[in-house]
Length: 139
Image 1 (cartoon, rainbow, N blue to C red):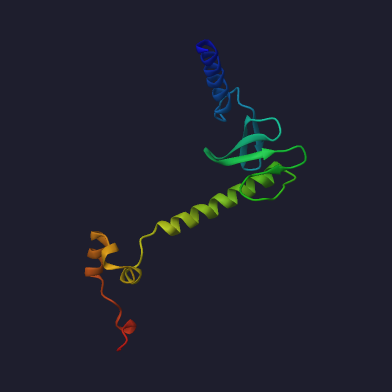
Image 2: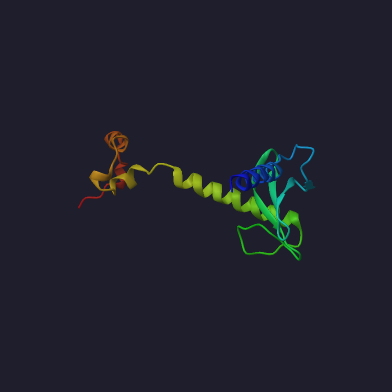
């Protein structure tokens, strides 16, 4: 049993080495398409390709027998460049949404939070906050 495990472990390490080849490796199977590099990772059907834009990996696309897909939408693409562009557009939009969500809340949003839920930094921001006079309404 130990020998079998060791053999399987060695085979796994060898296959991982092949899967994780960078696009600059001479043994990597690389396809250049308009603005992208596709690096074969593994699989037979679908074949999995890591997609690089410049030096950055943006995701994975899949080559099926009749079409290409990118895993972020349910579309079937005729060409690999279309699947890569769809993936790139999705990742760009997802990155913008993430950046938008990570911005700190405005002082007005902090005023709507429960007092116990405010952090000390948020309290400090509210101490310095001066509301616009035009926003004040007599009750």
